[in-house]
Length: 112
Image (cartoon, rainbow, N blue to C red; front, side):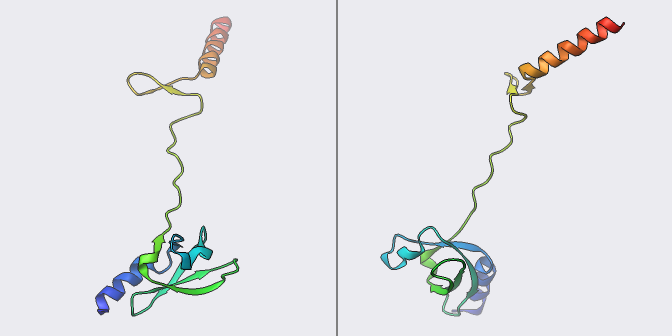
């Protein structure tokens, strides 16, 4: 393997969490487990460390059988709970917020 390709793989994979392709019968025991890439061999294979499982240790995998794990992203915050958008796309106040505004307006009228 060319030196530049090896360095590219090192920067791309080392320290990243990966999952192993469990569709291959040889790797079924790794199904649903995440490991961390600790090194890339000069032959282009990755050393993956699994912790806290029966398969604890470093395991050697071809790049074709590992995928970088991307954790699910939290949903985008659409605004406060109960707030809805009007036709223009701006947030409308919730029913509770409207009631609070009416109460505050009534207090101001009563005190003046």
